[in-house]
Structure formats: structure tokens, C-alpha cells
Length: 292
Length: 122
Image (cartoon, rainbow over all chains, first blue to last red; front, side, top):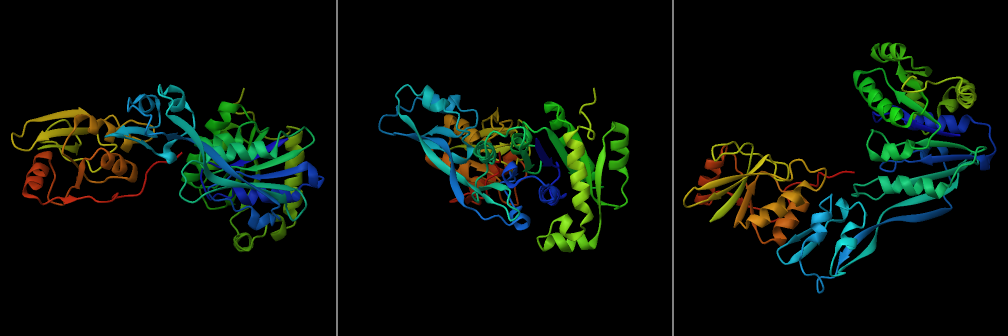
């Protein structure tokens, strides 16, 4: 059972929900995996307090040009869809941050002047969370623009999950490639939103991703009670379940600022998340999206 | 001298476009005769690496200088490798014609480093 927590809009409470969900589950330590895939700003460790035991670099392959063999024919630049390699003057320039590691330039070079080298863009970390379950996270190096390879390798490193395992994925915000990579393959998508026009707008975008994968979805409204009714109206009309409402509450803000999960602040959340999990497991809650 | 200027439309009387990689048009002007030719900027609709793509295109036209409002790090590095001088607009320019005038007066500032951080993302 893989549950991805995503939002569209950043700062809506994905990590609050994902960490609270993981801490609520009474499953054996080895059977629960938590993946922080928000590699640009992973902060679930503040709540789950893992002890990192293993790390490994995330490298992507980028071209390296032997300028002595290169005939400046320009085939590499022609074939590159991302303009990561360019022939200018008497030189071939490589722009590592634009490279998507497809290998086309290496393949197309008639002189065999291009080889590939590793470019490290981030790191993966793994170890037990304070509660004993297995914790993984990816961290992108500052200044790097491409999060997707880190998310992909993070999921590979955590391994194929079997049916008995529960995997909670804290997805990156937005609906671009890294978020898509994080939620791909999930059995259930928990969408955290907030009752604001911006929250609603990005919820709709996230639903478009869910529709591509036909993942069942459930909505959690955070900061409930701000006064904007648009999210409720949209969900009612679309037939989307609002599974949990987290109120706009000063104690929650103060608690999360101190690294406490919802169940540390209000113990009743433990039951709420356990019920949520039970219902997700039975597909008793959540909506097929788009609706059949 | 042949110069290239980033423009919002296809004419020497068009307004300037502050962006280099994603400007709509690139206008090649002969500073003596004022003969000009407009090109669609292939970087405009690039999904990524717009600055590099525009720079490669510009290098193919072999100008002495390129003038725009902003050169990001990739465009800067590419134009530098192609040995093309870069200048940025000043507050007195609005049309391509006025850029040529300021350039001939020597009132534009030559660029010796990127003028903004990269705009690329995943």
C-alpha cells in the first residue's frame, strides 16, 4: 500500500499530514517506510527525528567532450533537446544543469569524442525514524535545478514494496515532473489543500495529475475555517471526499513550529489517521478520479 | 559594424525586449547603413536552455555585438565562447533605432559577467 501525500500548492501542510499519518500507524517498524521526496526542501526529519545510518550520492551522467578529437560538426548540439551542449566558436560547451542525461550526444558523435561522467546533484539518506520505522529522504544540492533524478533514485533505493508494506511518500509541491515522479505508482493520493482561491486552483491542477494515473484520491483541508467556501463547493460538486479537516488553530501552528506532529498536539488525530488508513485500505473512502 | 538587438516585434522601430533568450525577435542592424533584418528568436519557445539556443543562433549570424536587457549565465558563457561582445540597454532606449543611436555614441555598458541568475528549472 503506497500512499502519496501531495498538494499542488506549497506550504499547505503535506509534511504535517504525511508525518502525522506515519506516526499514527501501528504497523511493525520494518513494514512501514517513509519517503521524503520533497528533495528541494525536505523537512520531515524535524518531525520524525531519524537516525541516518546510510547515505549515497545521486549522480547523473553528463557529457564530457574530448576537444582534441572533436571536429566541431555540431551534431551533438543539433540532437540535444535541452540545449545542454553547444558548439560556439572553436569550442564545445556543456551546460550540466540543462542536461537530462539522455545520452543522445554521446550516441550521435561521429568522432567518438564524447564520453560520460558522473555529476553529483544530491544525496540519499536512510535510517530508522524515532518510532522505529524505515525513513528515507533525498536532498538536492543547493544550486541544482533538477529534482527528478533524485526522486526516482530515492524510490529505487527504498525498493519495490510488497503488499504487506505501507509506504508513505511526502511528495514535492507543485505538479511538475518531480511531483509526478513521486506520486507515480501510488495506490492512493492524499491531496492536502487549504480553503483559499490559490489552494483550490492548485488542487485542481493536482487532480489533473491524479486523473492521468487514475489514482483514487482523498482531500484533506488544512487551516479549515478561513472563510472561503470554494474548496468545499468544488469538492461537493465533483464528488470528492474531504477526509479530514484540520482547523486553523494557533496550537497547531505553535506545535508544528516545535517539530511536533498533529497527534502530539491533539492525541485524537491518532485515531483520525488510523481510521483514514483503514478506510483507504478498504477503498471505503476516496474517490476514483476522474469519476467513472 | 553588425549588431543584434532583442526586440518585441519585427522592425527597427519595434520596442526592445529586455530578455535575450526568450525575446520574440532578434534584429540584425548594420550600424553604418542602418540596413536591418529581423529573425524569429528560436529560443523563445524552447522548453529549456533558451539562452543557449538563442546564443547559438546569434553566433551563426556572426555579429560584432549583441545588445539586450539581460544575459543569464548560460547565454553569457555561450556568447563569450563565440567571441561576441555583449552590451545592455540603458534607460534612454525604447526602440531598436534608439539602441543603435546609443550604441554608436558609446553610451551602452559592456557586460563582463552574467547580469542575472539562471532561470532554468526542471
